[in-house]
Image 1 (cartoon, rainbow over the protein chains, first blue to last red):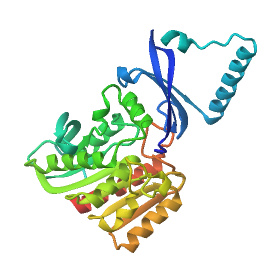
Image 2: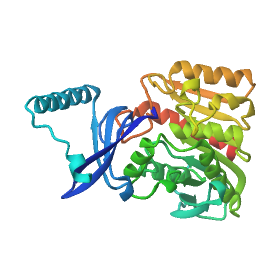
Image 3: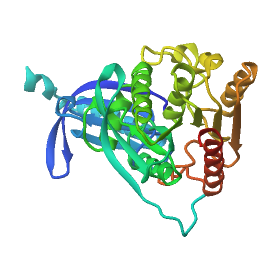
Image 4: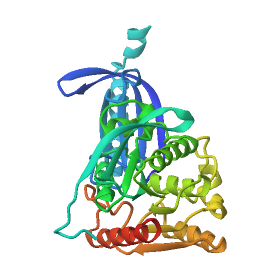
Length: 96
Length: 251
């Protein structure tokens, strides 16, 4: 319990919370107690918009194996997109 | 112990109180109806937050005759569901020890200002709250008994210290000011059985009044009936020991 193992990244994205899409500006990744998963510790990803308060949060809690698989899958998809020349950086075009 | 022909009533409500640096925070308070005098109990919620389990625990102590207060240690981190606020604090690496001590001291003072208090105040915490409880019982005044349940991070390596947690609580053991009971699961990783050994060895070295109970077949948080860690047999026995300890030292 209470590992305090947590990292944050600034992100550009949107997430669906109920019926509504909300801006997501930070991604908090921790290996600590989950709320929903029936595990003592899990890889927790909270996509949030800190400026909107604690409720602006889209949460995902994964087993260790699931988290590793997710990382591999994301990397594979991005690599394929890059290989096909379709990768674009929407963040720069949106905020630049 | 409660008898079936006995009158029982309690009041339980959200209150405000002065915490660290005199700042206003909220708290959940429950007490038996009547003039008392009743012993007091400060509950320190765990890292997941000021949640329903802690509200129920507050009423549980009141049922057993304690004026009980559970301060919202995450008050300054905004409001929403206990889970959303807890996730925010988790992402921030927890809250500063000094702030927690200030809030617990404020809760203690609030209890001591009540006309129905018997003059004694205990402190109870689980998980990070167990660690905070040990810290408070070493560093704050006016605590008459400590219940530490699986306090993770009482023993800390130098590289685990942070500005929010600058000193390992075990280093304050010589200043422990009251009797304590410790409840631990032998399958726990934080605190591990080895860390519990260190914790107890330091208490013995310093000649402190303590009793440790360690349960086989139980890990971290085995009182939490809403989590897979719950272990019915061990939890029932653990609660029995906790309440007997509190009765001995606070009533």
